[in-house]
Length: 112
Image 1: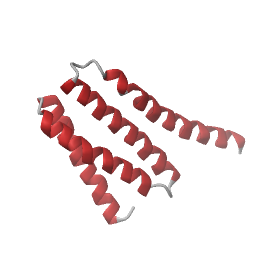
Image 2: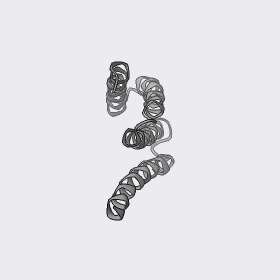
Image 3: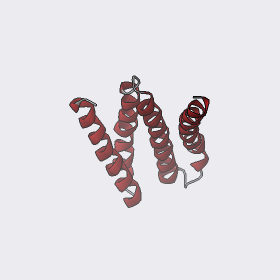
Image 4: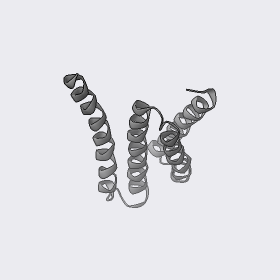
């Protein structure tokens, strides 16, 4: 991984932690504000990792997780936690992406 991409990945972690800190602290504006760059950077990192299959699948799962996480936070902040179900498909998609990746590896090893 090149240094610029590693720096973006590290910044993504900072954004993610600030978003989660704001969420747990009840700082609505900060949480929502930090959700946008966190989600966008997750999708950028997924796209940037497209040449490495393992990184692509893991970053895609992280993108799903972050999006689900942000939706869950918005539901708690603004919809009296009645919209948690909006996040569920994205959590499941992230798990599905990783299941696909690892099952494909298992089957490839069994085949050879």
